[in-house]
Image 1 (cartoon, rainbow, N blue to C red):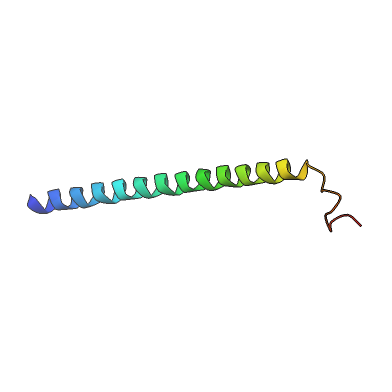
Image 2: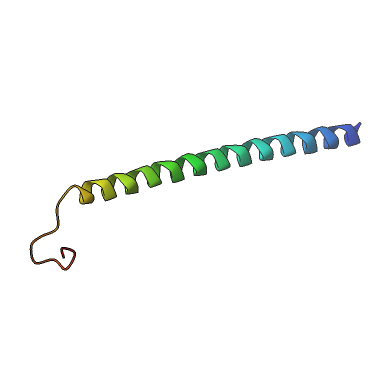
Length: 59
């Protein structure tokens, strides 16, 4: 009977570990997407300002 409890405990541990891994991967994905969106927003914000007259960007 003790062996049955060990198998059940091992199965539960694998399920909990798998669920935690999926949660971590999903959270990391949404963090990266949000970070990229914020960076692209900052780039768009900076691009809305024209370069100054003394800048080398104007030819």
